[in-house]
Length: 65
Image 1 (cartoon, one colour):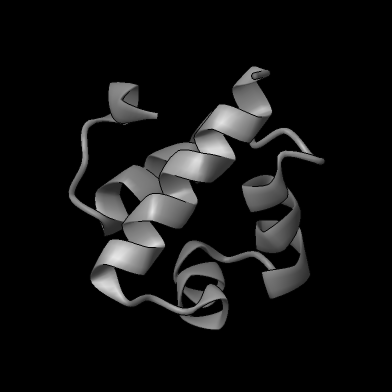
Image 2 (cartoon, one colour):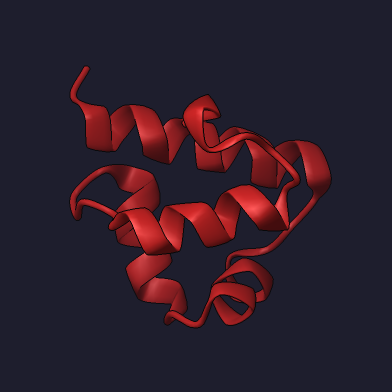
């Protein structure tokens, strides 16, 4: 599994666990929901700034991803 897919799976797991929608998370970190969907499916790499925002949103350490 490549790193983008692994990060996407971890984001998806947190979203499912916390019942957070694509739209809510994408608005919280300042991206469009189609972009977030690409991050989750692993088709587009996520930059560290966005990943840090997601980590903070879910109160997770950065290295969780």
